[in-house]
Length: 242
Length: 241
Image (cartoon, rainbow over all chains, first blue to last red; front, side, top):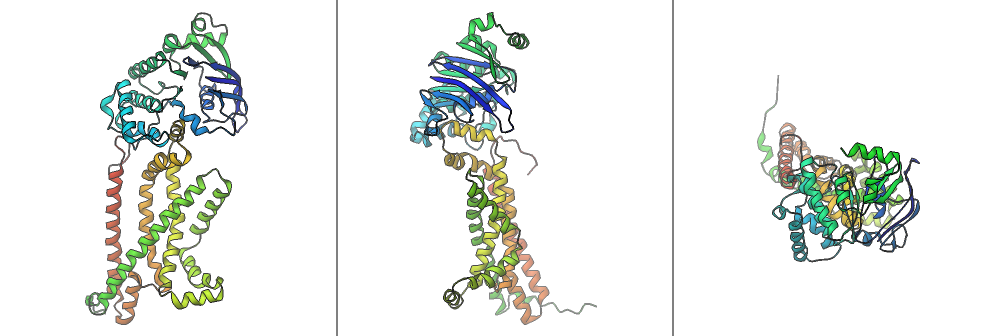
């Protein structure tokens, strides 16, 4: 589904953010990427849907190259959902409009079709009563669930999560993770940048530890937790697994 | 000692009363037309400055710096006295001969293009205040650049720019007084004109001042009404208004 082949990314100031990484995420798999901040996790994630341009290597999504000039990036992005650390809901639109905007404008659905689907999704993420409310009136956890619904409304083939729970209060983390666990179990292909190791244990097929732009450790979930080889991975794990 | 006989009746007495009404009306539509040009042109210039196209960015930037850095009075004089002579001789003569309200036309264009440069900057400051994550979120759902601007970024940015736009609108409206220098009988021009017949400049300029104050007040009231209407529920704001 998603193939990452020897991708490297530099910022304008010459800093190497992602350093020659490769991975393959198969359909229906969930991969969790963890690592210290500034290690290139989010940048790599943004490369997958072309929000960030990389200089070397290749990323294929469903066989289509992200960096090829002939690729219609908008069409490609419509197939990949993305959830952000700070939710990024559109503050001037109601929850319902947030969710239906892209289906109406990109998929050319009628308002009614889009709204029916949106209500279905709001039910799925557990807040059907918030359709008419503005994002600023919701808690962080509710906002993030709306953001997930907004992505799902495009019926994406894969979902990218960029630290979806890092900006949330502890008591709200669970409500978002529950939605994500559900999603993973329903067979969605997911790439999740997160430090939620409980989530990784529960649903991830593979866990990657990233540091200084490289994949330091990349293992099937069980063996990642049981036998991480690299001392940096072990140190990181011991710090966040209390 | 003050030797001045007030005679307020010059404000309504025939034929001056009609002149004042005419003048105030001219101020109103002169500034409204200019404002329309300013908004449309300003938005266009601003969007030019935000595109990835270098040539468009350069042109947009050049426009803003050219029009906001030359005094409006000089621009008025340029459009009125100098620009027509740059036209072919026949066209120039035709212009002077056939366009009855050339001064008015020039005033609308000059004020509109000048204010556009300032409006462009006001909108740009709003656009720059929209977090990058908003673009990313919109793009990630497959919206095109244009759709992202139209539905997500601009509605957000305009709300941020609104107080600045209110100020620009007021400035545009007050700047319309300069049109008297090229013979447009708007409020200020009329005040001076009536003064030249009656020598009651104190009354006429007082009246003009009151007209500006009252109209500005109405504009401020309307704009802040709209501002309240557009307020985003639940979004943190500072201040107590």
